[in-house]
Image (cartoon, rainbow, N blue to C red; front, side, top):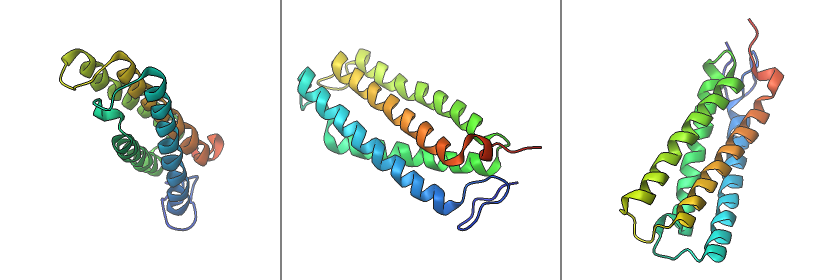
Length: 151
């Protein structure tokens, strides 16, 4: 079984150091992309400052927390799964779909001041962007051939 370690890689696993570096890149990239999406949407659609989820602070915080979670999950899957890339992709799709549910509920509940279709749509686009970055960057780290365990 592969080991997540500070140094080398055994059996196709991902070293902890490499995971940390690539994970930091994925987090930073997702934060930048989501801030750009947020800024463009606020400008184009005139989304008011009253819609707190699209403030710069919440966008940065929630993107970073979600992406760190994705890196941790990828690291665990890489450590224990026979086919980590395939499994991570499947887990990531499920998590993406689940993450969209509160956005849709927010639209219909009326619980968040300033909620509009454009605001909720922007949040959903941010979720999809983060998902694409997490899956793309982290599974590229593992490599399609090297990460899938044989046996």
